[in-house]
Length: 568
Image 1 (tube, helix red, strand yellow):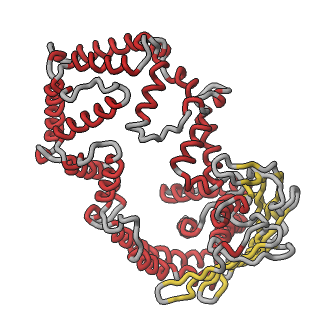
Image 2: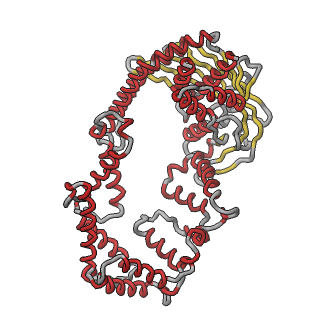
Image 3: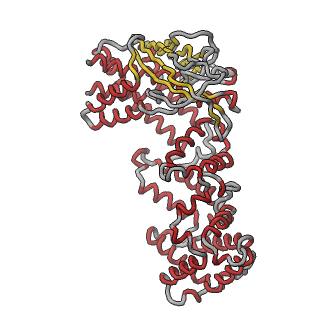
């Protein structure tokens, strides 16, 4: 079991996602070079000396990453600690909602000015200017009277006898102009849930619409939301959803009934005569309660401004969370840049003291099972090509395609990935210790991770690099469109490490059908892993750094299969 544990630890360091198995999705157009019913094979060759160079250069790669991070700006956060960054983000978001200078106010002044800020906003719109400047000197009853006068000026006659739906849209639109900062799109109430989400993404997150992957993720999340609703509700508008979310007793009630209920609830929980007290007195009682609550947690918060209170809240939240368990001592006083470098330094130590020694032991284990397989085959069968679809977010087009992946040790006898999953499951069940069970569970999750297979059309993207990265997620780069302009994609990657300018070299090219033709990972001049299409015609020159990610997952899956076969 010790040797199995060593192997799984090694695989965790190199195994990435393998999105094959039985795919669902895609279609055929001019940019799709593969054909339904065809099978495509690749041969992977492994050079153990080259792989050893890859492993030995990782420490230098981590050192180079430390140097780069120390020279990189992280949106201004690099010189902040994590708590300081959280405070900065909080101030930025809250400043959209609160009056200017709020961060320097104590709790009492903050509450008064925030209420005055919003009363003034509502007075300019919803309340028709009926609220006087001295509204805090009014008692609650008088304040409600002038508020109703304002609503009478704004709303049609008889509004108080109208049911809830009459006011709901008006209230939400008013909130959208204030608290919600305009995030609700125009005409939101007449949109379906899908149209609503699409519009918010397009208006608020335009960069996300540049990727077809965003559309796929949305299409996968929507059915999960619809599962909580009766069949056919996916065609309902937001306006039609409201009756489903609000109890009928409330939905059918008029506003007078609701306001009376609110009045009775407040009256039952307040001291006698409260309605005759000036609003300023009621607010004073509320601030006294808030001050009492805060100082009961920390006496030093007496009279503190909102900046100090937020800092205290963030520090308290971190103190009660488990984040400190995974970070070094003193992390809360360490800048983010220094913290990342410290984590990399810790990784280097683990690599040199744990991973590399286990690598050597794994090499010995390979010898005990008859040596390391130097050739592994992978095969993709194109089961079905579907009609082209188009993203409703950014207009990118893609062809869904069903594929099946198989693996072989001799390029003759093939095992499908589904069968390999079964092999791996039995291996997972044989793990005898908690550590081994945890590792195999993680590996099983990685191996079983699948996504819908698509061939994206790069000509429908504003940036073909984004198209290529999307394609890597879908097919790991083994199959791409045949109409890339390869001059727009990074060519031939050489990754230098500290003191070693040629630590890693990655290269790949695709043929005229969009099939990966050749790929190679070298280290210190030695080829570590190469992959070649078993048959193909024509070549498209081009190289991309993600080649390493294309080759290693398939190689490791083959190693698992090889070991299982040798043990039988």
